[in-house]
Image (cartoon, rainbow, N blue to C red; front, side, top):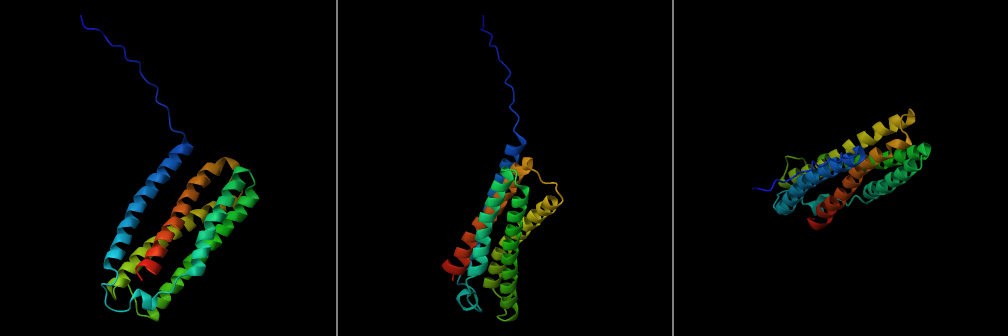
Length: 197
């Protein structure tokens, strides 16, 4: 006679909304990291194989705007701390500072592009270097603009009094994205302006 086995159904533990948001953001960051890796490898592979002006001839290291972007990681962390303590006014001030620093980065990047296009003649179709430069740096810049759009939306809601302490975890998920954007810039800055120059 065969022994019967008794199976006890296991209760599923639902994932908390806060954890679900962080897991989702980490999945997005992982996917985006893979895309950036492909662009970085392509940039490194084609470095020095282009005709026309070389990166050394036309690129200037964007020190000031890089400091602004890196500083914005500090301001978003300070904003997170403020909202966790329930200080919405201080959170709003730190968030505003983060947006200003990010906007300075975008403005400086666009100014660099203007100079490259109109003074040095480097366009996305002028050379292999131009194609790779605008693809990689433009990919990062588009992520900064998306981040600024999300941060600005939160700022509007904060100014309207719609952001509360209970939204701290959601702000933390958004901050993860912003830290990702800053981290990617470390790689892009190193590759474009130092390693492959």
